[in-house]
Length: 285
Image 1 (cartoon, rainbow, N blue to C red):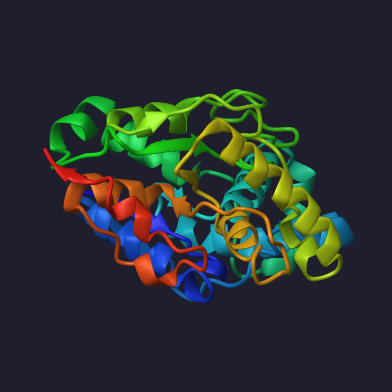
Image 2 (tube, rainbow, N blue to C red; image 1 turned 30 degrees about the vertical axis):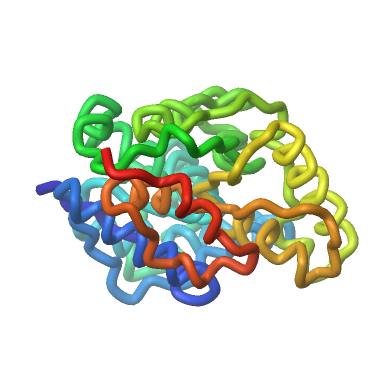
């Protein structure tokens, strides 16, 4: 059994609750226990650092300091939360002036940058592995064609080393292949969906997200797969935002694991772009 300090972030407690349910179900199957950080607070995600970099570090450092009491690995399934947490953790560790400044503001808590910050792809890769994933699958997903969508923040980490190639990551591709799905090549795995611009510039989000959806359809995909709740939400919201483009469902990475392990998804009815057609492509192995 592996125990990880778990930072759900705001999305997994609100609009993407079914993502949290999915992650917990899949992780428990592989013997990974999530211990939610007590009294965690919003990390600022994609907005705070655009207003005040010091504020962004302080918001993150408070959660890191709480997790440091437990030691070990800090798991953030949200790409924005992961990105901000890793940037602050690694920067605080290397910059003593920033560390002193941040700690003076979160006192009596203390952040030293000692944690190992992980996203969902890293956890599944390092604590389960492609070989074990392939052996444990119970359902045949070979008829399911997907395009992996990492989003624009997961590996584009400023001033710190990313876990995968910044512009052409392949770690999620490998996990999906281990699950038995058909992973299609496409050039939009790192394109921006509009992120939090949905709130301030809806037209921009629609335009950017439609480009991603169009390219996924052009590739012949049955679904887009992402680890990011904001990316999933923007693409899934396209019909509600007024788009009349042809749509395919946008699945969380953990949901593809659900399909391979259980032949079903707990969040099937939570998708705005219906994912029912996906279920016709699942067969018992």
